[in-house]
Length: 385
Ligand code: NAP
Ligand code: G4F
Image (cartoon, rainbow, N blue to C red):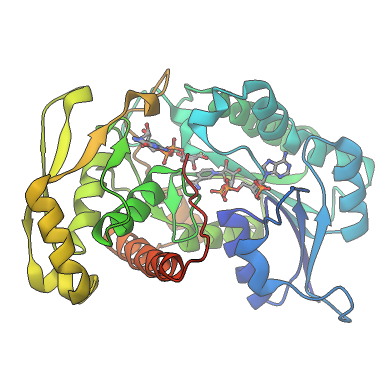
């Protein structure tokens, strides 16, 4: 029997990888996409099928998690066996700017899905995945964090996700819905949004070595995150919904790394040794050494001369801009994925080195293309914050 899945947030990082993964498994995938003034389906364009094709396995519907009737109608039309609720205003810093919108989408969005399932009499049919987050742990009460660690949210985003977590548990306990939370720690990829820290770093690194940017401006370099690869994490989402009983799972690598260290590792991929001096707002990262062979092999011989001469004048490539600090910070996240390993059999394929390699080389390729287009006189987009 062909299964049908509905993914909210299909145009996002996880939505795109999950759609690809489920289609390979033979699913018919429906996705909710928002209307935007510019087309925003870049991440899923390779899955797009012309609406005139018969028996499509990838179908997009206009929708928004803040619109109850729209959510109910889409579910009624698709009759999904599995619903993955990935749609969210997912940027923690931005949630301080748009707290009410964040609460509506990230908090109440899942309630609209859960209620629709009840109203449509689909309790026995549809399984539901809620994209919960390690941000719930916030001001952590223990290290590492597992499924029993208390929550202490530190942002409007995390507060909204706290409601979403508990309403998912409540509908499971009240009405017997097959509804589960994946408490996912940070996961990144070459298609990560440009303003999350990992992608901001790998994009800036590529631009700096190619001579398109001088300095990377950062916020808090000392916070620590448990970073994995999004490709591994969407597999966990699928595995969670294949379990006979619904439950909640931590998905993480079990290793935590400072933002500063992430930057150091990314630059070392292209033969650049960084050193950091100074404290807090006066901290700077500068190029201490260029390993020419590694630079040439990874970036290209034609870029070495220009980069070396720029660095000889000013070696500083990382500076602090307090505008990127958050009103309340989450200092350390480190997940314990033992339950997922034992019950789901989930084991990630990528480690941090593999993740950073994937991102750095993808952004180098992307920026070389941009540079080439600019040289040819074509307009390219910036994607800055
Ligand atoms: P993302 O790249 O920011 O994608 C978010 C998706 O949600 C996009 O498709 C976005 O549409 C959509 N969306 C935003 N507001 C919406 C609304 N009002 N109605 C319907 N859709 C809406 O996020 P991600 O990294 O893929 O994360 C997926 C989910 O996992 C999110 O819920 C996030 O909070 C959660 N999560 C992420 C991580 C992580 O490290 N990546 C960790 C834990 C949990 P547009 O493309 O139109 O903006
Ligand atoms: O990459 P970030 O913006 O991710 P954050 O805040 O951890 O949230 C992400 O992971 C959560 C899971 O734990 C998801 F639920 C959420 O949706 C999102 O995907 O920031 C990571 C760290 C923070 O401590 C931040 O203060 O990096 C620090 N940071 C330092 N400088 C910066 C910057 N973050 C960003 N975005 N930009 C900076 O310039």
